Image (cartoon, rainbow over all chains, first blue to last red; front, side, top):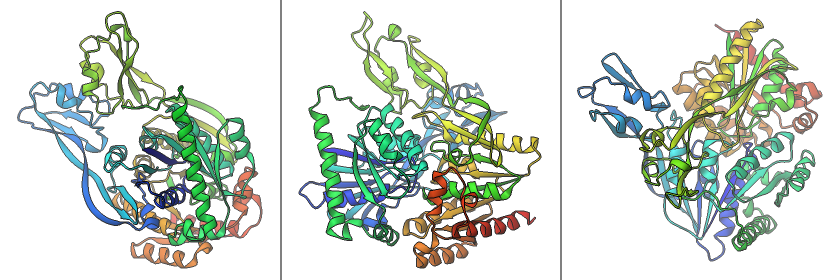
Length: 296
Length: 298
């Protein structure tokens, strides 16, 4: 079982292009493959893999509900809450579900059991198939601020496949971290521009803080400058693929077409990338000093 | 005081390049980089820092191994998978519990319920924010610490300080570079703003993401306009975007042509309008004129 997260600091560098094509070429072999779209704020993988949806279920997170007839205005809930999500005001208690992180603290400290937790729907989990690829994704409800609880549940959804490709949201904070946690390998997609390099460095620092192995894909190689290559070499980061700055790929992308479908040459590029990732993971498994990711 | 927020839904559509150019064209403005976990605007506007402050998003739990009796209460209560049974032994028990600070949400529940008072709950520094003098005037920006959370709170601090700096300098426009997505940092950067500019691109992804981010700004009742960047890469999709936007009541105030000058300008640490006379610079000038006109309307 191999879980590969495809991430990037900067948006629009080609995460979804790489992730969907990897899932597609992986499914041409005899291993079972899943593509999981963890960019729950703006998921796009379905535009390229055109899955047929089989199930759709709501995803919730716990928030407090106060029975004011039992409340004694002791203030314990307000005191434990680090997020100002529950505030006693005179004889009533105001709850701000959008600020609540769902830790459960208020319900536990309430001496009169006036607080129960109810489930607030934050999005949906959709599951289906695209040819031989199991396709799961989360879709955050618009207006909902916190995506990590949804990403967590999307990642936990079945089935377990030989290869799982996780398409991460851009950035280097909570949603990206939630996606790459507990994976076997993080593939960072960048473009060789000053913005791309700056955000790649931030993403590398994030992955290293999580103690996960990583490799880089340089997309649109040919545009920009050579500093990204220099940085990877100096920081001993393997460059696992270079995708040329190719108008054909950009046009295919704009229409929602997989780059692997353009030509055999394009398909080979992703097949080669997949086998390089597998080699990296296999080498790490054999290393006794493998730095373990954070596992439960 | 007016606040123009530039967001995109989809990442990499060209927000930051456009913000840098608008800041140059606006002449008297303050810029705020609210994309705090992947900030890039400083790479173009060469800010000189005049004030820096640390940012604390809250506290995090830390187990004092000497006091832990390995009862496991903390692990049982933690809902964020942040407690691990692999801390050092202490003479009483062979192994103690440990908090993974990256996974710790900072709720304090474990510390509150630990019967041995073995868990400290300590304030942490989660980033820094800066007031700088950039080429375009005052700039407020930030850097979220590595693998830190609560970017929404940091976004609010940057915005608030940008407004104060604008007041001090007698500037009545703040231009805000937002982050991709529709989640917490985006919501924090748009609430109460004067105008949102959505920068999109003519791809199916751009079209799809525009839909969701436009719904978000409508939910918060913020006047919103659209700009299609690199529109000539796929004129058909660009037209579809314009039609869909107008169906939602959003005006497309600009179409910017694809131009390699954007990358060249970036490499020279310049905005597109400063770099050279390009097609793209011409389009951004027209875009600014339309936005300026819109901002002047009551």
